[in-house]
Image 1 (tube, each protein chain N blue to C red):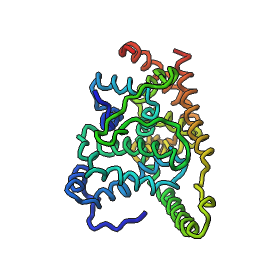
Image 2: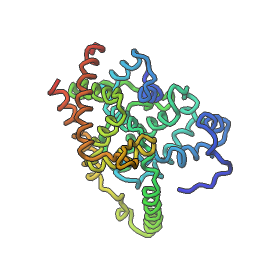
Image 3: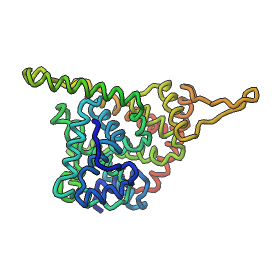
Image 4: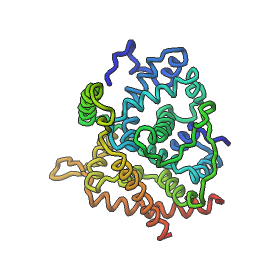
Length: 224
Length: 111
């Protein structure tokens, strides 16, 4: 959706934009949702809805949620995280919550921010013991703690269903974007080292080894 | 400690103290939906959807939506449906979950 804004919000950081919103500038909120964080929201939309069909509707729902009660949620945001990550959590939670209504699927139970007032959780107990999954939590924490972000990247991509060859290409783009694509000298010329499917496979193996070590440490660290 | 969306976001960014982090992990243990959102946000490469290729496919989709909405005005509601069926979306989510569980089991079994 293309929106012609009255002001150029591009040059303003998130904190300034939130200040504008809380001063009554709703257009700044439109900009955050439909422009600046549109890529993040697209990613979440694809994750839970398979494609972008519901994107605009979900962005509008998010807009309504954030406007509710005079921007209650935004007013409560204390900048302990970046605005983008917070918005991602709020949006992810909302998108999951809307799944039964929009596509008739209730894969997850939503709990964060359910009360709508305090943006706090309803700490409901799981219905059966199998819902407790300490091993999954340890795995997520271990992935989180991986020092090599390429390892984390390929694991997350693999969980999303990409094949090693596709991941290799994505990894190449990722490194290029961050100026991390390595080069080697061939006949006096500098040549890019392009990740291959085999490389992805090898890196995944190393990631698995590191995750095992991290999980062992976590088990010692936390008393579950 | 009350686990808010802000605390979850701070966890994703690695900005919590050890005790807070532990509380978030305990919370995630019984809230799989939070696990999934955290995994989604751990992938820092959100901007891959911002390529011109993806944007053009989005624009194409919006055009399709416009046509669909226009057609919907003259069609019975039951004719209008989303592009992916609920079953297909459910399969995608199940497959992602299965890959994750398989990896978890692989790691766990070798520990």
